[in-house]
Image (cartoon, rainbow, N blue to C red):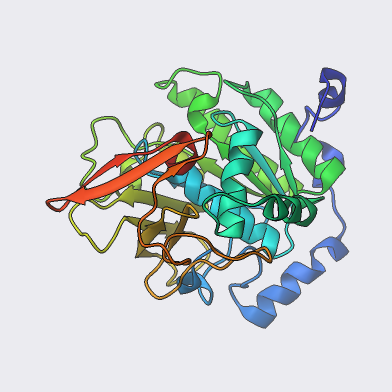
Length: 329
């Protein structure tokens, strides 16, 4: 998606009066849903069935995805995008840490369940993702005003429903600029509400956090306004002392969903780069044959496909991992 500075200028005022003044009829479906389903279960389902009857990522809300560096936050966020697309939602990925090429290389594997996606799988993905997936092709940092403009542009021109911002640390501010972080969080929350999209912001755990300790929402780095303002908070961490589990995912804040807060243990299929839970193997989105890992016929995978190299082993109850950018960023 190529956007010129002239394109962005008219999208700078995210709180324009024309968007805030709405007729009563605009809220009819929301009120009907409220009375018919209580805490309405409409929105994006997570990739894990454990939350199917309890939780959704809803338009107008913002979620945080936190964890230590290398925990696999971007990997899981990519699964969320694919799940949302498979449910008919349109998605925008604003990743300033990975190029669209690297993100797509990972998505092809996740969607096809193939270690090295075939040309057929790639063409299937391209056709399937058309008019459902966009990337903001920018690397490095971005100032908050431009970020809000990009989100509004994508909503107005492509009708996106879900926006991934990866990550907070790529905003043009110092890591200890808590007031700046507060302003970014408020701006993203306003964008989500006024544009009727769901925004997921990736952030990090505080420095010095013990990698073997399970995180709480208080361990998220930065201003307390991040977790206070968020409607939803996820924490993703690696597990090092249990050979049967690779990671855990904690939904530790779900403002509008009673009973949704819980932890689940995750396994990582190194072939397709998908997290999954015991008894619920990843499903292929494309019409392809799974290849490698627990969803294929191979139990162990060693990969070197000129893009990334992945090896993984567990010794003495601790996990030693050397993973490329595509795996765990």
